[in-house]
Length: 200
Image (cartoon, rainbow, N blue to C red; front, side, top):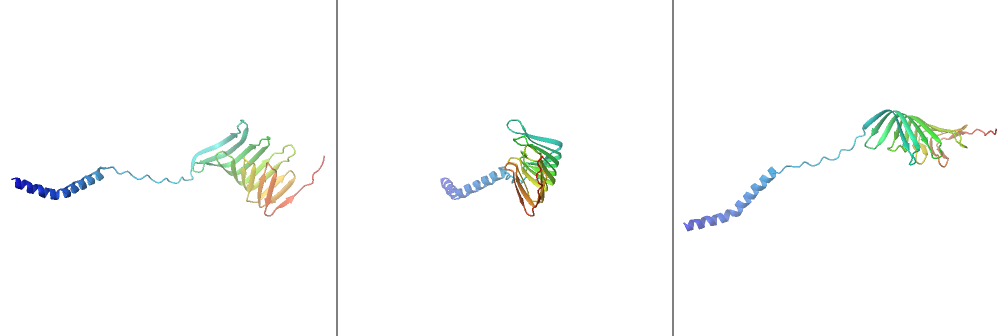
């Protein structure tokens, strides 16, 4: 009897590592089947350039830190795009007032502005008019495209442009205008007509 137990134990001890490996394999298989599989997070989809809200017959005003009106943008319809935080406006009208109180008006068939309306692109029959003040005569810029930086008071275009300052008139293929320094850079085919000043 003891011999049989001893023989059985020896045989069992021979196969014990194999049995333990089998049990571990079954246990691992059971754990893998029982553990929930977490899906990999979906990659971020690039934001599509689609409007997230609309406005009709609107007016958007911005003020300086002292509460004075800095600019007002009006339009027939506006569409806001969240992916680049821009505003697209149809039949836009802009009124801007500088630190000296000089008023500048702008109109176009369409405009694109950034979130704080400091950068404005006027597209289609764009017209910017700076009203006369003190020793500065009335001035207007007309082009199919004008890019206005309201912070630096610069206007530029890479399209043909017409500039009228008082009675003087200029045309060019492109232009950069600095309202603060009163500098105009006309490029390409430039033509001008200067009217003589008359003293009264």
